[in-house]
Amino acid sequence: MELTKNIFFNTDKLVPNTTVKISYVGKLFQNDSEEVYIHYGFGLLWENVSEIKMEKTELGFQAEIELQDSESFNFCFRNGLNEWDNNEGENYIFPIEKVDTSLVLIDDNAGVSVHKGLRKSYIWSKKLKLAIYKLIIYVPKLISGNYKRKLTDQDQ
Image (cartoon, rainbow, N blue to C red; front, side):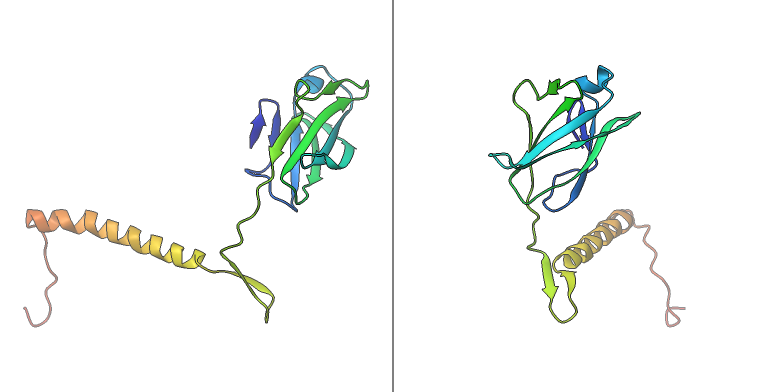
């Protein structure tokens, strides 16, 4: 997932209580900084602020961060010389999406999550694809008169 032209996540969306890998190739990487730190927090008030050193790779500086259950993930970057990349003073702020659990049913006996509705929708999509396939194959044969019905032993 590309968030800006210089920041990438290893996932399509940010979800609470998951680990996300961030790759940064912004101005601090382009200026050959030896070390870069990500300064981050959660929510509108930057709760639980932390800072960790990012690992320098050929693909940029990278770090893994555990996302908290909050409405947003906020961060900026600084190098060892205390130069900052804070998105022109706006910081980098991205929403954390809540997981839709309406299709999940917990079976208390086994402690196993069962996806209700998901299986039914899958089966219906397969049935629909089969019906469309049959229409595409057999309707033109019926219209053109080239439909040959299989002969049974009684017909012969």
